[in-house]
Image 1 (cartoon, helix red, strand yellow):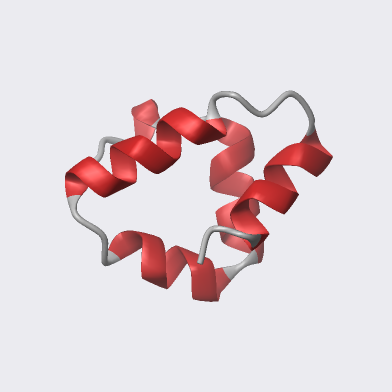
Image 2 (tube, rainbow, N blue to C red; image 1 turned 180 degrees about the vertical axis):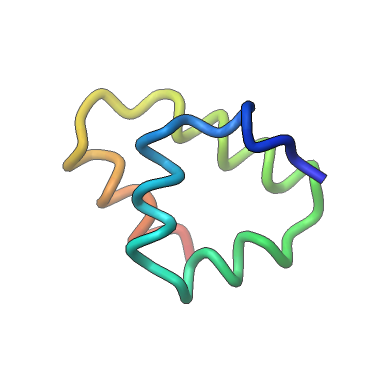
Length: 57
């Protein structure tokens, strides 16, 4: 399981706003979650992060 300390705060906040995405994210393998987290680390603004999370699935 992914340690919460590994999650970017903006990603965590965006997931909290989109419970449907959070549920889908939680069902992924650890490898798939890590790939998505690495993508989240590339986001430069709140708007980019929100868009990233909204378009994950």
